[in-house]
Image (cartoon, rainbow, N blue to C red; front, top):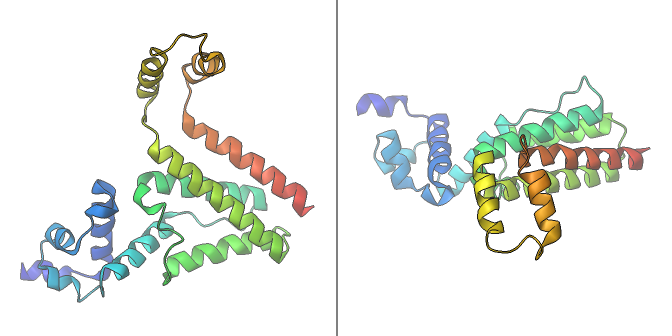
Length: 215
């Protein structure tokens, strides 16, 4: 136990907190459970984190640190596209973070670096300051909104999608809701359908719209 405590540091505490939240949601993250996961007494945690709020600030920063920064050696649309897809992928691994990402009043270095890089990429791409603010807002609104919708869907795999669709459709005749039936049968239940692919379709619409406004 002494050896374990000697190795304990803030980064290890935050990584364990992220793992707990990934496994059971943010409500599963308590000081007692975190200490147990690390094999230490709860009081030992306070040598590395101030309190629960400090942990939340820290784990949000960990998640921001996983999102790829927008590359500066490509055009702004490619840069924003890569960043948005990276953010979606990271949030799919940490769905508990969706509602916390922009809620912290004491953002960490990774969070600030991320925001600064996105703003910098948009400014480099020729956006005025007001248009940069508009672009950032609409992109993040779409990213977080899609991530939340995807997280709350009652299916994950194509098999689960088909099973759920057939269960729902079995409750009514095809003539009762013809448009819903058509979309489900001729699109959703077709081989290769994946709801996640809708993300890039919507993202490209937004980027194309921003490009027209920028010009």
